[in-house]
Amino acid sequence: MITVAPMLVCAFWMAMLALDVKEHGDRAAHRALLLWAAAATLLYMGHCVFFNRDTLLLPLFDTLYVVCNLAVFPLYLRYLVRLTEGRVSRSTNLLVAVPPVAFGVVVGALYLLMTPLETAHFIEAYLYRNSFDSLAGLVWWMAVVHHAGKVLFAVGVVVTLWVGTRKVRRYNRLVDSLYADTDNRRLRGVTTILVLMVATCIVSFTANAIGRHYFAGRLWLLAIPFVMFSMLLFALGYCGYRQQFSFEDVELGTDGPEAAPEAESMGQWLAQVRGVMSDEQLYLLPDLKVDDVARRLGTNRRYVQQAMNEELGMTFSEYVNRLRVDYAERVLQQEPGITVEELGQRAGYATKSTFYRNFARFKGYRPKAAER
Image 1 (cartoon, rainbow, N blue to C red):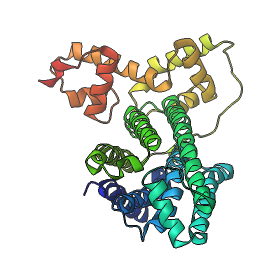
Image 2: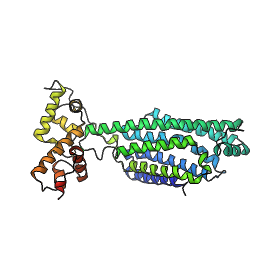
Image 3: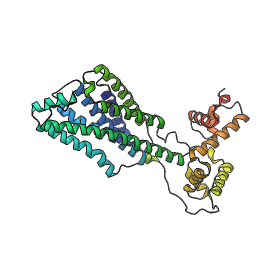
Image 4: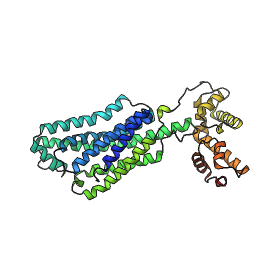
């Protein structure tokens, strides 16, 4: 059972994502995530065949394993690119597809060229004992290709972690700079996603370095990485499945007027922003956007964003939410009997949980007086 657990997890998310894509289309890059889930399912199917020592099926599934092992992390990175940038360049698609396919073609061709005795010798000597001793001819070359695949896999893990974390953080900074309310727009649980990516990369890197052969005769020991992979894969699939907002949904709009009337410095621009926010209490508007403030000032949103970043060191989201919780604190002092729901709504929040979270974040305590 332990050998099929990761495969079943991946197959579950593949089915769920396929149904979601059929019903809702490619929202939040779910097609790209579906492709990753399919590759991961085939990868762990190959693991099942290997650890159950089905030598008749092993040549076919080892070929698929080589392809999917080299594709699974790049495909997840491709999903993150699609999610956070809206499109995947042709060069990125080629970098994701060419190495796995090339290695798969070479491995498949070598299996076809080797005799049954050579195939059996390769499986027993290299796949199950990781030994180059007594390998020669096509069998030796097959072992070299597999070894090169392990090195390339390790490179893919590092690149996915480095590039993926940067893209997730950059996307969330973009959302924070455009919207006051970011709960349904940011990558949900960004910290969780990054931690899961790091954990998955570490476990994969370690398992790759140790090699499958080490676990072949120790199925009890196999439970450790397989349980970890099952949990990590389920969490990654869950985070991606719940995500409904992506770069394609971001309202970039137009930059507006290029001129900066009546303001010669960022300090003056900030004063204008503070003035309109205070006088008209724009921060109390639900789902306020930076474009709303820029239009009210008759200016370019970049001036608003730049003024906040340079003068206050804040994003638009942080600035607005600080104003909201300050307002809520004043109302709470004046009306101690007000309910949390009403207080949150008056402060511009759509949900009680969002109000609680922001109030605690900026004030350091929860509005307990309003819970009565």
